[in-house]
Image (tube, rainbow, N blue to C red):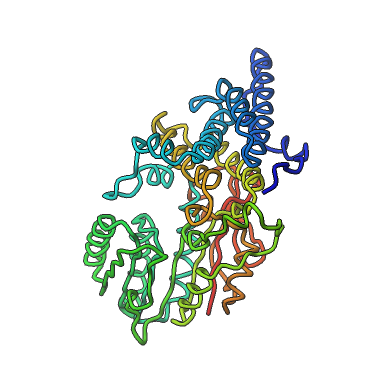
Length: 421
């Protein structure tokens, strides 16, 4: 990448929303100060991203020194967001000295390989996003499989009992007319203990409902998955479910392109690993493939592009945190924001194979799936009923082309789609 970055448009800097605040007369001055601080933080962050991208360490450091007293992990949504992005920029700068970076991060809190990330569990409870996703997939899947007697569903990396337990219960209702189907769930996950706990819980649930059930744990990452591990048998009605995981297969050694390659704009980048994976899945002739991904573009070669897109996306997430996390403790909210912070660090500080949070908009996934021979499938769901069941204001489920967009105040955050081979 050249040492000079194109100037950012002013409207990009000003279009991020700040947290709504009360408008009582006594607080007007405080509100104005908060808004001024928020705009100042956005300007400093964007300036720092440009200096970081061009390798100007001294100016990037100067920006961070100005950001530090304004940002805070306990402040308003813009302050908390700025703290996460400032940390990500600092991490990218320090990575220029691998020994120093490793020494500083060795003592950082690492996720245990014995449980599901507790912050993920809190996120699932506090936000309706995943409940919307689970309801949409379950309603479509049960309806599509209603005439099948042998059903095999493959979980590509989630391992979330909050999805699988209700799904088994939904399949049990099919027993009222034709008897229960034979159900097999294959879960692909690199966390062995998570697989063991999930398997025990699902087997117990199926036994209680008197459903013929088989659990097939596959203790590998998506990158290591082979067709033989899935144990697909002739006669099975096969479905795949990927919830916020498939983008990791877009990781490739593109560091040269990031520094010296041309700006490809909106062109969909070829990815051999993703192409091979989709070809493998299609060769098994699944009845459905459910894809859920962040509706954001964090897979640009250029750091500044990813940074601006990240500010837009995560500002909406942090704003919705303020509304939905009233009942959470300060520690709980901080845990969720640190979970987002790890994604932000990956997007901002990492390059090449190390950068895995390569979120892409649904329009690009269409190109990838259609190119692999898939066709969009219709999804059956009652969006109004799903939203009312969660009792949350400010959320919408909107039809967009062949997908369903889960939105926060008109801002699409997650795209849900179904595909047939």
